[in-house]
Image (cartoon, rainbow, N blue to C red; front, top):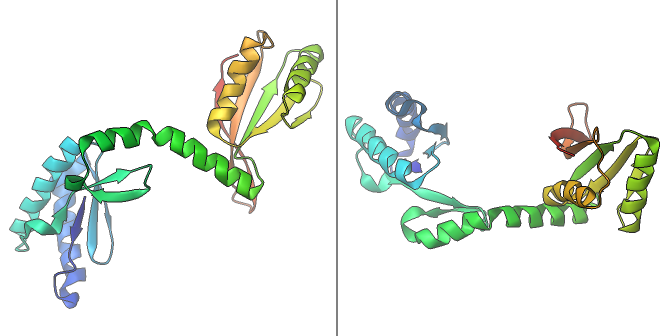
Length: 208
């Protein structure tokens, strides 16, 4: 939700934010996280029910500080498929549910799109096998299906444009009977690194 202070005279906005912020933090505690703009205070919580309760508490704090105006406290919801905040009163519950149900598919599609446009896969899969023979079988399987590879005797590296594809590779290898005991599969995300440029950061280890 947000508290808009743009209706106050400009000279009073900064001081009003400073006075309201500690009061809101003291009142809300760990129920929500708070951030601040020049003319706005933003309060974040995870459910519609808690947002409604916290909005009322925020209005109480404003009243105590002499800036009571119900329309200043606006409860909004983030719609991941639209990538925007919307007024919570304007979005039917069914649309909210659909947006979050489709959010993962949407995120995977956007990640794949960015990977293709950049020409850099978003994920790397590192497969460590128990023997060179097992590694060769995995290399042959992946090559036949168009995966780009880099490998050593017992390690195979390949890349995926989205997390879903990276994780699905483990299931495909398992179904093909290519994951023996002792096989280790690591998925890594492509991220910026402190020294400049980018690299792959370990994210998860999948069961064989």
